Image 1 (tube, helix red, strand yellow):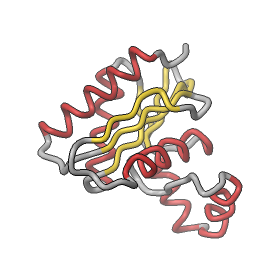
Image 2 (cartoon, one colour; image 1 turned 90 degrees about the horizontal axis):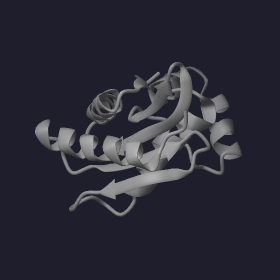
Image 3 (cartoon, helix red, strand yellow; image 1 turned 60 degrees about the horizontal axis):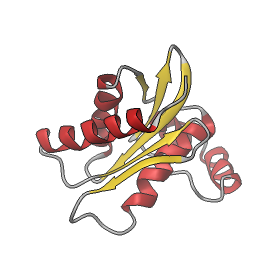
Image 4 (tube, helix red, strand yellow; image 1 turned 45 degrees about the vertical axis):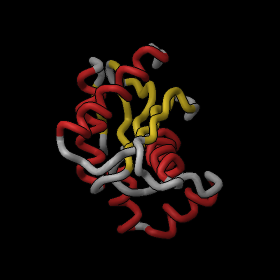
Amino acid sequence: MTLTLDKARQILDTALKGARERGMKPVTIAVLDAAGSLKALAREDETSPMRPDIAHGKAYGAIAMGLGSRAIFNRAQEQPYFVQAMNSLAGGRLVPVPGGVLIRDNGTIIGAVGITGDSSDNDEACAAAAIEAAGFTPDAG
């Protein structure tokens, strides 16, 4: 299965609603397909200008490495030179902190969600809940 625009928008809308219900700070959400291409993006009012790049980087890193960004974060602590090298190969587009969650359908990676704006743990939880609500399996790493 591929990640359709309708499903990407559903995930995006659910994540925005979830962020408000959780009382999170304003967030930016990026939804990417399995090729790392942007399917949907929303930037709430009062977020800083770099937030779209950060949200994209969290999701892109997950897709590029096939790992939720929490796993990349842990690996960065254990093997900083490896993650630094991967980021260099990716043109600096990886953001190795929690908040980038893979979207799996029957085990297959079909995309990723990156959220930024609140704590990394809250960003990750919000992404995972939105993915699950859309009928997919979240993989935060």
